[in-house]
Length: 248
Image (cartoon, rainbow, N blue to C red; front, side):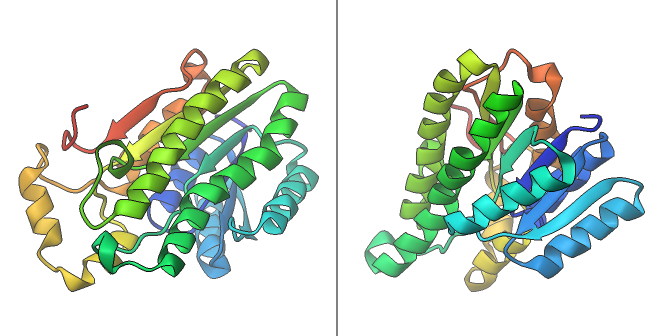
């Protein structure tokens, strides 16, 4: 990853922060893109403290103008974009029949449409420079479903299908597109979701073969491999990082 320019959306905390710090530790120049600028700045500062290179950009992936501005700022700063990691996500756990259209729109906008926006903007740049890797963060919910997460599962399943198609279309340009599907992970988002069900983590740990939730580093290590030149011949693949919870 030495000197590769990497954008990580939702990079300010949780899995995104773990991905940013891992890629920076491998020599990448990291763009921490996040709606919460203070979180992005904190992550970038920690990377710099460890001797890495990082900048923070406030970005709302649901707004195409934000994505266009982010992309132009990165090119202005570093001259190129080598890797795009679409990590930004959001969820609200509730039975589908209790959910509202407003919630559907928010979940689809952040988890799915944001990926469409970033790919639409950044892939032409990768084609022009003759190099690029895209790693989209989906979820095992998008592979096998998850009670209380119907629309989230639909959005994450959409990412998988979109990525496979994109991998086929981008192969002629030698651009890799792959997916990482985390299982339950100990992140701020999971903690927020668990507020109404404090026993959730313990229940999940009992059914995960490794008997623990994932931590951000578990996911980051998988992303780092797919973003690296070691995965040059890997494209259109979906890698589950769930401690064995789903073996499909």
